[in-house]
Image 1 (cartoon, rainbow, N blue to C red):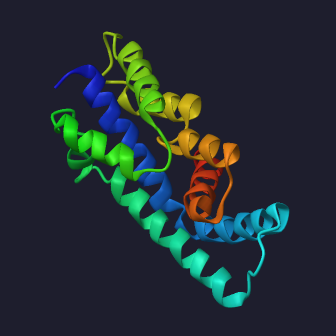
Image 2: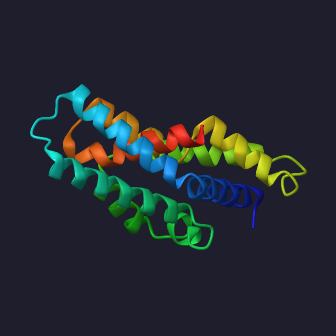
Length: 168
């Protein structure tokens, strides 16, 4: 395994651990950010039932994101050997384009992995990646939502904003 791959795995594991440790804070932040975004954007017809449904969707997305970073399943999500067709299908299913953000993450990891002591410094280097780049794919989600806000994108956006607040 290359130094870059080791560092990326350490990055995802650090995100997993940080989010696992802050689940209660994630829930509180989601509730705050969702209420504020609904008010700020003037989304109409948000009764208690609809608000509860959006909270539930956000919490499901949090669980999904945490499992995405799970070190035991990470190879299935971020494995470089997956087919090009599967990758393209994933991009079509997502309403945001995270290719550039992922390329930046890999480029930064590759640069940091050039150090001779990369294995001894994996934890510190992973923390540097998180500090510099945040949690992948949050930047893509946030920028795509801000470019064209809508209710369909709202749960992903709220989760991305919340995760970025937690990890930064």
